[in-house]
Length: 279
Image 1 (cartoon, helix red, strand yellow):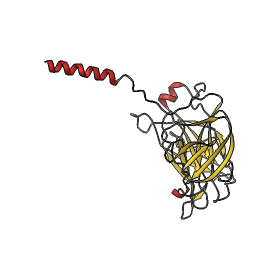
Image 2 (cartoon, rainbow, N blue to C red; image 1 turned 135 degrees about the vertical axis):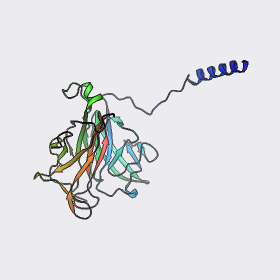
Image 3 (cartoon, rainbow, N blue to C red; image 1 turned 30 degrees about the horizontal axis):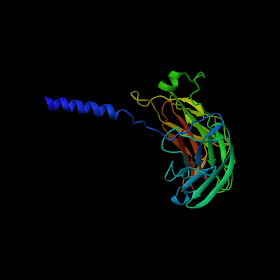
């Protein structure tokens, strides 16, 4: 019995001290209205090969991301990686971006960033990046479709379409593109925002998700296509010929996504859709 008493006493002490000071800290920055928050995307029309990877990203000569830090920057993707909804922060105003590949500077451009959340797209290594508003907050509860119960428990998600399609390896696609999706119930094609040209994005469009699996948090598959200026389905090469560009994706309730079209329409690297989750 004495042994049991001593064991109980030791266990109680160990539990008391083990719960005392084990605070988990994350590398974060306090943000106010003087700060710009951004996600950085790399959409040069090149093959996704290791020889094109960006090993280090410096912002105003400060290391923000690297192969050993917040992530190596690869074609048709972005940083910061590792989790949904992460943004870098920097003082609003003129911001310089330098990309290093090995020990060489391969990109050096300056662009103005405002306070708030935005997306920075590098699509040409000799041009300044394109900056597009991230349209935060995503779940505006003041809107008729943004009631708390629809955003957090029922059936709303959001998508914003970005056009970074090149015609070939040099020339951006010249026409405007209309992104469309199939209605979850009727399966009819619906426009997702207005047509957008190269380097532009639609507004973040809210749409209804009908659960594929009723006993789940909630998601369903949608089919997507793109119409050109003539109202025809956009055709792109798939390596063996020109075919209609189609895509499918399964969004989840409450999420906000970015669908980013990149690559080239008529040659390699072939056109592809990248998905980035904002929330």
